Each structure stands twice: as C-alpha cells, then as structure tokens.
Length: 184
Image (cartoon, rainbow, N blue to C red):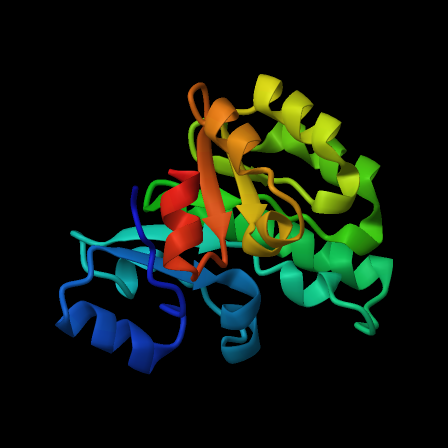
C-alpha cells in the first residue's frame, strides 16, 4: 500500500513534503490551474525532487460538485489542456487520474479512455454508475480509483478485495485508517 500525500501543488506544502523527505506526493491539476496561468510550460521536474514519486489527480471533483456552473465548452478546453499537461509530464508522473468531468456525461468520459496511457492512467468509478460497471471496468482497466464515500454507504469492501487481486485500486480521498486497512 502506498500513501500519496496530497496538496503538493501548493508551494508551501510542496516545500514541507520535500523537507520531511516524503517520497510519495499527490498534486491536483485543477488546484494548480487556480494558482498558475500556464503562460509557459509547467514541468513537474522543475518543482519536485527526482526521488519523489508524483501522482497527478485531474481534480475533476471540483467540476462534479452540485452548483458548479461551467459550460461544456469550458470543460472541454480544460480537459484538452489537462491532456497536454499530462503528455508534457508523463515521464515524471507515477500515475494520473482520467479527466472524469461528470457534467459531460459518462459516454464522453468513456470515449476519452481510448487515449489514456495504459501503464499510468487511473480510471475513476462513480458510485451512481453501479456495481456492474465497476466489475466491467475491472475487466478492462488495470488501475481504478474508488472514492472513500462509496465505501461508507454500502459495504463494497469484499468486492474491492476481490477485484484487487487482478487490478490495482486507488482510494481517492481515503482518510479513515480502519477503512484503508479493511480495503487492503
């Protein structure tokens, strides 16, 4: 089990994580986007030590919340820039999450999966898609993200244990030690 310490897109957090020799750090593209204008290429190599393993999260949860008003055109522009950002930094990230913007619809998200790097991409399962979709994803993809909230409402831990025998699971936002240990 690897723990990625998130928030490394914030310079003060990044310095703290580096000073404490934290080997696995996570950064959010959407949070970085709020801080950086991207007027020049933003390269992970320029901001992290070579010994740090970086996990890149698209940060789409910010677009997926109720009440967020972003047009489909804006989301498409952000998704295109995220794709370019991933491509620019692919050699430096350990893994990255797909751009799972729910306002664009599940078909849009699934269509984009054909362009993902099979060795580094993490596809994201959303609870309202249902357990059958999770099982289908486990048959298709080697790395799947599941949110902590999906484990709280119903007991899918046995299913997660079962599918984790053949794929890797990423617990998004997991902060409950008992839940982390039970899913292992």
